Amino acid sequence: MSSNSAQALPSCKGDNYKKWTNCFGTYTNESGRVYTGEFGVLPGIRHGQGKSILNGTTLEGTFENDKAISGKLTYPNGDSFEGKFNQKGNFEGKGKYTFYDGGYLIGTWTDHKLQGNGIMVDKNGNEKEVKFKDGKIIN
Image (cartoon, rainbow, N blue to C red; front, side):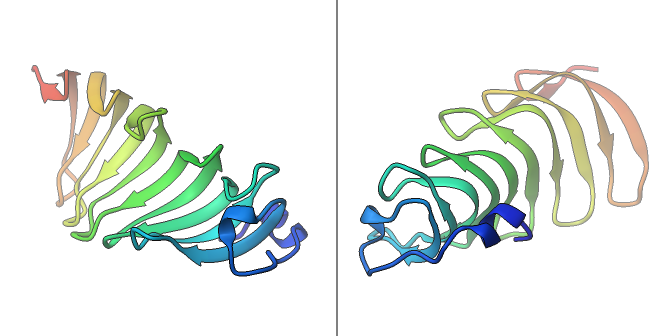
């Protein structure tokens, strides 16, 4: 992570991350999530720039009130999504989904489903304009 604000925060003190505020630290929680990043004014709440890893899935980006709001989500198979997330953690707004083979989709997501006009590029770089409805190509 290359956030200037992360460097400005002091290191978190103590072993109980649920008490950390206004600091930068790393913890592993009960479910195995490893988080390295910023904590805000509320104790133990991820807020600011951070990196979260759970079951081989990595999210590096911006957190607000303990939820990821934007960044890059990378799955264990190598697929990734770069963009924004809604309160449920689903893809929301403009973003890019890249497949492990190098192909990708660029478009607008609504609650994890592509909607409207987008671009699909295969692993060989062949580009095609497409239209999506509820996550499916309709043209």
